[in-house]
Length: 281
Image (cartoon, rainbow, N blue to C red; front, top):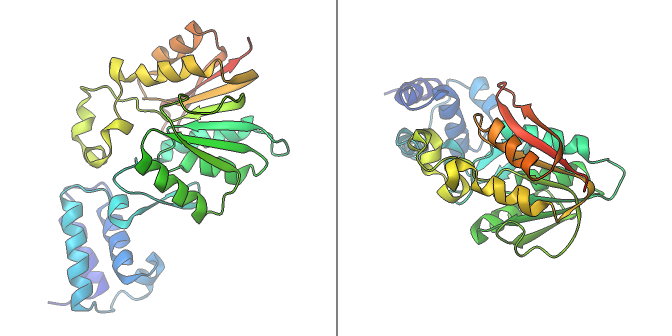
């Protein structure tokens, strides 16, 4: 049996073809993890042979991936907005869709003013940490109900040397000190309890509390939009990520709570993904 990088990648990509949309990429990422090398190394040295213990480690990872375990949980990392974030099964895996929240958030935060913003349900910390890094004058608060998630978010903040951020274990605003914010931003649970997607792909391995909400996935969005009103400065902004099919319900929630300028923005694949409202009372 020839155990060159090239042949092992071909064989493992075949083995992953039934489970993954990107079998070769998955195989490369897992092999890089075992070899402690970047993907360019695999292309530069396709004929290099693997040691027996490297092979063993690699095929053990491939086997986990075949069971459906997400690559990000196997490697412990996922890239988001050009930064590496540590992830474990206690937090959601960062999704490219969520970069839309960052884009919109950055447009609303002037680079040269000390604004206050809060990320509700921060998970691995990707939203709060990215905004804090891109807007160093901003004072950022990040909350999560899960102490395990908060530990990961704090680790990620330290890893990226972010100092303008504070963390609170809190169910939405419940345990956040009284303060008025310029921006409230959140990627809350928004999947309905009976959604068939919960049986597919990565989400089977992700924390259900971070995914599922009552009232057809709208309960947490309703609570956040409602409680945010007393926490926003006049002309303050609310941004919430939601499901691709929830645009009308979320807009209705915002409008019923008397938010102004309500509109929904589309993600990279053209799906309505983030709804905005301004508080002018």
